[in-house]
Image (cartoon, rainbow, N blue to C red; front, side):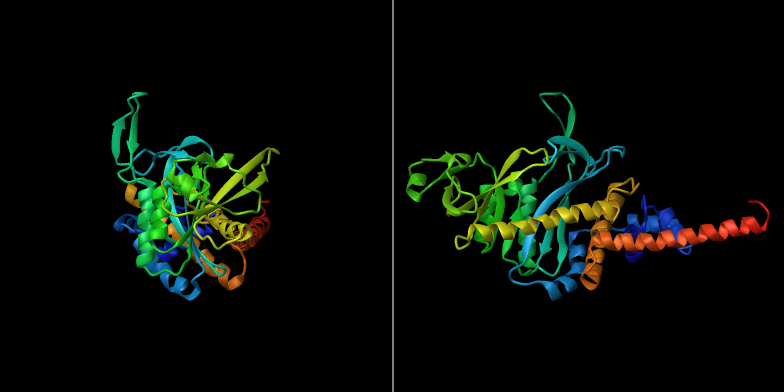
Length: 354
């Protein structure tokens, strides 16, 4: 049933429904059975790992990276519960109603594989003292889940060298945790981070905001972050936004042996998580399920991530990206629909109805 349901997610043009899958299979499997499958068990990150593990073992290497990032599956019209609730969208600067998913994505030159994930739960309701509105909160922060997912990756003996993440995960606790576990990191870092130019300055409490330190583009500078026990390298990238405004991205790296160009090249791999988010929303029906309960909603997300993995296996074999594979599937469907239309027209013409 998992294979059939995920195939449905990979091929359905609009909403992924039990009725739609049943109709696709000419009712050989009743829609009730599909519904029962989604409600029968609690699929989770560990089960996803068991499914992707054989492929990862064939493709992993010591230079691999694990990318951590979250996305929100928008659910504006679905009843609120502990996973469908309001989450702050950092990319837009507003709160969005939906399901917040944190993923650990393994990447090397041969594959991009989701190896772990967490659906952010907010089971505790409370009244905001400032607004008087009812809100929800999590029992664990995303940073706590981030560290737990790293522990899981280490426990699964996944071969990787770097952890890549954006500024929201660049806390002192996170980066020291990574280094303490003998891994390296490259992350975005906020421009107001307090930084010392030498170990002596750090001891004397002479800190500057990162943005006030002279760092040339394409140059890595060794600095000391407040609250971090080891030195790091920082680089600065200046880029132009779509509106022609200028932006600056600071990166922090734990490997003191890298050049700025190497840091930037490795961090570019983080873009794979953006491609992943785009694919699960466009190609595996992440946001296109009318499921109503926490269990069925959670299981649909599990299936959507597994469907991404199935697309990735096809990509490895065919060298076509996920969108090209989906277009190829849709072209076949369009040809079949066109042929069916011609047959219907012919039948009506023969019957004198046209």
